[in-house]
Length: 68
Image (cartoon, rainbow, N blue to C red; front, side, top):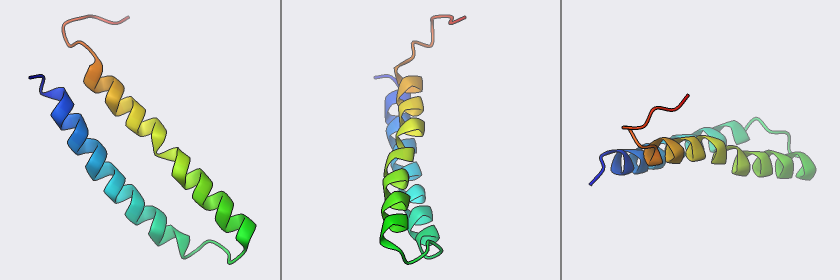
């Protein structure tokens, strides 16, 4: 079994837990306006995808191949 896949899974889970804590903590500073809150949560709900995709890409990479 490749060691990168389980490590990537743990990194993603730990990262998401920390991310959720940060988003909920920062939500206290968002103005109490429906549109602003909606935009905040939409952006916060999408931003985590890019780091997760990077970690998944790293886990799928073949360590024996050289990429230029």
